[in-house]
Every structure is written in C-alpha cells, then in structure tokens.
Length: 315
Image (tube, rainbow, N blue to C red; front, side):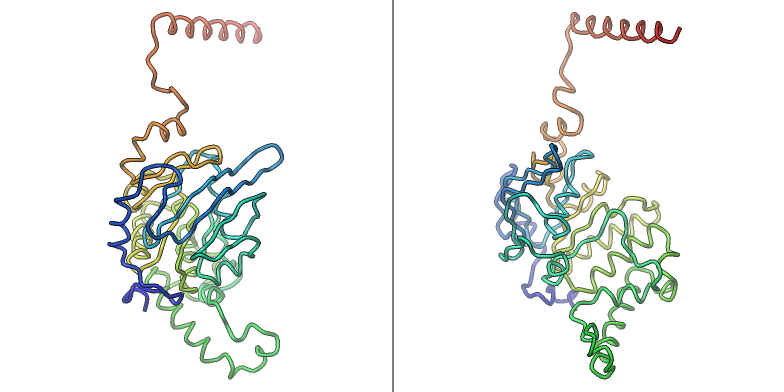
C-alpha cells in the first residue's frame, strides 16, 4: 500500500522529510529551480480576447511536498490548473510531468499518467451511488471495452479488487456509511471528501486540489486538512489552490504567488506572507505609504467634492 511504502504504482519512492529539507536551499524568487521537480512549466501564456489570464515564464513544483498556489481573485490560478491538467490549452508554452511533455495531451491521459485533480465546484456523478463514483475513478479497467464488458469473467476479479480499495478509501474518508447513497444527496463538504477519495482510486503521484476548503463547514475542515497532509506522508506530491491563509500556513511546505497571471513570489509560507510583492498583489502597490499633510488635505477635498456632486444629483 502507498501509505506504507511511500510509493505509488507509478514508481519512485519519495521521502517527504528529505523532500521538505531539500527546499531549504531553494532561492525565494519567482521561478526558482527545485532539487527534484515533478512539474516544470515554461512560457505558458493563455489569453481570452484582450485579457492575458496566464503569463508564466518559468515555474517548478517540487516532488514529495505540499505546494500552495495563492493569489487574489482573477490572478489566473484555476486557469493555470486547467492548462497543466489538459482541461484547457495555452496559446504558447511547454510543460512536463516527470520529464514527459504534456503539450496537447488530453485530460484523461494526463490522469492516467498519475496527475489527477479535483475542482472548486465538485464534479461528483450525482445519479450514481457513492461506491459507483469510486469505481469510476479506477484506471485501466478491463471491462471498459465494448466486447470485454460482455464477458464478465474477464473483469470480475479486477472489479472486486477495485471495490475493496474503494471501501478502504471510504472508511478512511469517513464516507462508508454513505456507500449506497446517491452522490447528489451528499453535503458540500462530503462531496469534497468523495472527490478527493475518488481521485486516489487512480493511485496518483501528483494530486492537484482546486480550493478544497471552499464551501466546507468548520467541522469538516480539520478532517480535510488531515487528509491533505496524509497524501504527503504517503509519498505523493500535492499542489493546491486556496484562499484560506490559515490553511496555507498550516499545511504547505512551499507557496507560489500569482498576480495578474504571473508568478510574483515563491518561498516558505512565513517568508511569502511578509513579502512586499505579495502584500502589493493583494492590497495594491504603496498601500501602506505614509501621507504628508498636503496629500491628506488633497484627498479630503476630492472626497468632499465628490460627496457634494452626488448630493446635487440626488436633488
């Protein structure tokens, strides 16, 4: 089992402690080179009309650690996720997973390579039961072909093994009592748990979580935090988008900050949170600059004039 060996079916043993320690030598700068990157992206650009949503020059994701991707709303985080996982295509750029190029590789093939993701808005199959949702997440199923599906002995044992694995994951994610319920009947937090558990059916090497805490009640947050940490201890790599800064500080080993589609800062959580570039990205440049007396007077006059103008218009 991955939890015992620190490996996935895709190979390499990963020591999470050594992986975190290796980050101590990495420069705290955008695009910093990592000792053992699992994902490398170069010159990724995605535009929508006249808007350049993503413009990433270079970024590397360290293997075996938890990396947070943060930034203000509209920074391009989810779009970048979509590009890396094959759900969207960039205008230009190259990126790789375990040294294998992913340009023009469709999303389902990316997942088969060991790079899976969840979504900000959960994508459970509402009219299937919880256990059926879990079975769908398994890869390499012999019964998926039209002809083989009609010959049950060909795939019966594999399905039994998949079901056992699914039940084990449902126990782990505290969803076993919901096993036969329709997925559409689950709460928002339970759907997040189901989506994460289903992602693990593929035994992935890299798990990408898009705002895993969005819409989750406080009672389930701690449970989700524990599950994300356990992924790292199993030897997996985690990359997640999140707005909850307490969560980022709690579980991330490295933080990458996006603003206006670009990577503006990188580093450990404590270092990044105090970086002026990060503060400017969230609050605007020179938000804390001191104002002299004349500047304060000018701002007050402009505000009073605006209020007076609005008062005249309302008469």
